[in-house]
Image (cartoon, rainbow, N blue to C red; front, top):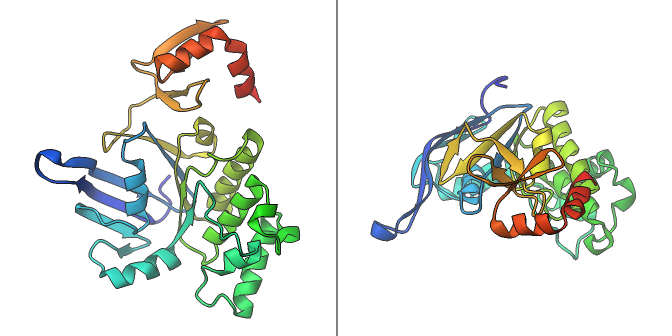
Length: 278
């Protein structure tokens, strides 16, 4: 999909931590583009550079080298005092742990990120977003009284509060059960398609591939376009098929990230397959 101009563009982005022999390349000359109406999921093993990728994409971290553009604004050369404006106006963030302020209601959490949170327009915008996501009856509820799925929907409403071009989601389904995770995945796809926003998700959740237009595999700081992955039925992590540990069971092949998961599966396979089916 390449409708219109890229909302997020990275050209030869490199991020190095440390120096000399201790230098670690978290990202190594990464090129990336994402477009309006598109959901892109970035997957990969732990330590692959996914968190660094997301923080650079959201103007929270500067690359060591390379160029980053968000909604037509080249951010790598901007002064530090200009970056908060880009983050507030161009980017919406969705977090794994929701990041809601416990002392504020759902409505107040959404209003908080707006330029003028106490204005009538901000109040109306926050209310409309929460009602859009089925939370009209939860406007005045504190986070402690919300379910995990409701908290994440408040988080998504907050991400959309300033009508950003780019939505960045960090493991948005990690703390949700299967049903609520599915609801959030479909909601993110709806945001991309109906609101014409660009959604970029970093995730270990194999199920989230279902809503993606593209799935990219990040490993050792680089994207690999040729990777085929399957879901480990024990831990749920994506596993690169090539070279993975495997077991044949009832005519199907299952792939595992480590010997421990393989052994657990062999001991009680039905237990794990039933959990996947749910």
